Image 1 (cartoon, rainbow, N blue to C red):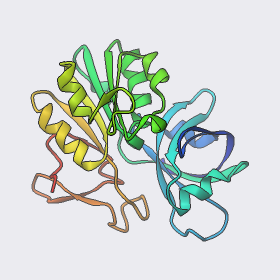
Image 2 (image 1 turned 180 degrees about the vertical axis):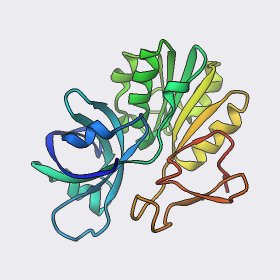
Image 3 (image 1 turned 120 degrees about the horizontal axis):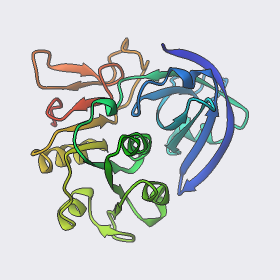
Length: 254
């Protein structure tokens, strides 16, 4: 069930350059069904900016009724969110997530790019709990924007890439997959659209799941601002309700 709730801000910390981790507490957490879902946040009590901001859920604890979000403070809305210290208006949980419960195989590779990394953390935790070996490939712009490397290392091997070569493997996530000959039974990916297309092509031999990053308006499928092109009888789907997670092969990359 989708809820709208004033959630308590328990902690907010800058964990890399312009990257913030915020922990929220409230009843809404009990409605989260799977990793990869997201929430829509009203960044302040005023109407400027008017639209909510979609932010993926990085991890959650239903017993403690807490969830952690990670976001980049880059626009008007997210910069305003940095200044909030008490409570925040949250709508969610929204969208479909990664179907961890039906995962098959022994080894999973999780591939994230930039702010697409956060939703993979809870996914990795749940796969690990199911007995999977989890491998992580995390791509960032530069050393100063790298985050959660240590957290992922507690779950399995981590390969970090940076576009400028200031940390880890120089280049993109696909470079690390090739260089280290990473093999798995299934993959989970989230990040910029060009990255997702390249990953699908490179890992075409295995099943996988793709989480789309897309600008949104309402978050509940009414405004059609987040439609994406897909393969199938219906040429378009809404990222906010049909996604953000899609099976490999569903999406059409322009």
